Image (cartoon, rainbow, N blue to C red; front, side, top):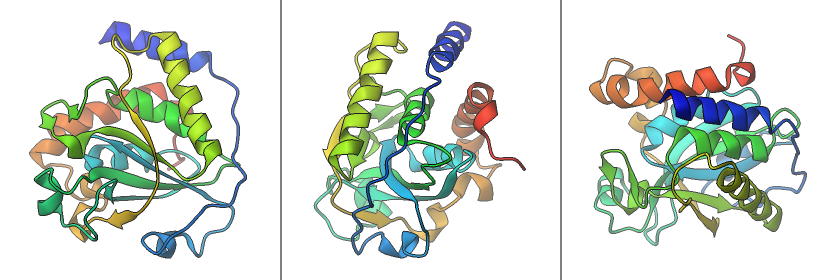
Length: 217
């Protein structure tokens, strides 16, 4: 663990340059309601295991305006959590991240993403197994796709992980917001066993690596 944290710290120190994406976001009906009152924001959809974990982490980043848990990448409209859990809808558990690119760039968002989940395990994060837990980036335009590819190349070159990255980079089609009880799950249920055993260690690791990028409380 100490070696991995050291490697991640060295990797982060070498990545001081940041960028922004200024292309307008291509909205659709399934997510427009979350962003139609926000100006000058960008949206990206990420899947990296249980959405409770990813949501809790990105909510703490400076420049992130909103994080919503949901489902994306499948062929069933408006799926329920129970349906997605079967692995038969094709959807992944994801988070929709709405952020201000003048404060935090997509490249920075993705660097965090690749250090808070294991992008080398196919359809699995720890004990959570199934295609619904796959590592995936849903890009909205070719610029986002290029940034995702660049960050993966950085990760591979830096040998941040001991195996090859298996994260999918696929075009965004639709985002379906998860049920209300999934939203801000970690914040609302900090004493729940999954939160204490699985999410707490990830949050501590994240805060150690990115203390300079956290929102001021």
